Length: 472
Image (cartoon, rainbow, N blue to C red; front, side, top):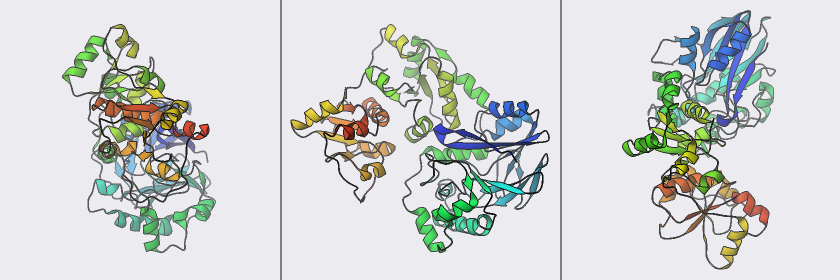
């Protein structure tokens, strides 16, 4: 049996495609659906079903557009209550795709509708399980997300459901089954995911902490809930989009593709509440940018940071991008529900400069310059990495001000003092400074190369691991 994993690294997402005898099915598709349609066309197959493992939080699924464009039927597991036409399957119900069978296994815990799909080949042999966020490689789905949509679903209740689902539904299955999860390392839907994106169930039973048969329910719940940090703010908004429905991506793209002259861009920036989102690389951005623009580089964890730092998915956005990458930016925004890009600056930042418009910049220092400054007296250093990274090792006297909790971090900063800001490599520090500079903080200096460069230079005192006491 051939199962094609279609992996998108920037959001650590895996969709799946299967085809048999002219019929195809897609599992957990991304928002842009043409690649799946083209894939089926290559096989001269008709997409019969779009299977959803649950209502996703970290991205907007493409199930509605894919169904609309192909006539496929959308399938959810038990307990799902979508606001549009879909099949809500029964536990153990079986669907046919050509000569293949797909068996519904209801596995609540990550969410109450979470479902695993057992794949059976043309000979009747069980081949693998598409597990969604129920079971990852090295981890399981966090059980605290659904409570942000349905208050009665506490994380303890969901963790208890997950304990039963794993032990009663997943662990009894054959060891030779291949596990096909919805996410890999880097996703915020788990806390300990492997870089591997498939494995055998038998191996996972040996190495995945959550599948330890010796764990009692209470021990399991304690382990699953330990170390969780609050999810990004866009997660519950994406869940609601996936439940209720959303605007066609074609309309979203058409709106965002509007090329704006410098004058048109400036008028919209002044007359709307749009965020100016500059998606160029950090080095280019620091040299010059439109005043009050926020930098989130497209060549990083773009969608995750947009979702973390722009609170409302309905926020209007004006885009500044490298020439030729405007459509990529609009697409990646839409993947996480930010559908209200209202245009981009034609000609990019260069056009703004050539028009003689006001610009801003960020001062950067390298590791040698910072080392010299520190010799002359006390220097305020902000480490904007995650608390877990900071606690692993950091510069002596550096203060942790995580980017992912920027409002809390901002409250620690005195506008009258100068701070030198670093992250791991230089991406997040520029994001951090751009946001604060737009809010009137003018004394923040970027440390180029981040902690990696500082450590490699050997010029700075670095702590060993520190057991965290309080985390932002």
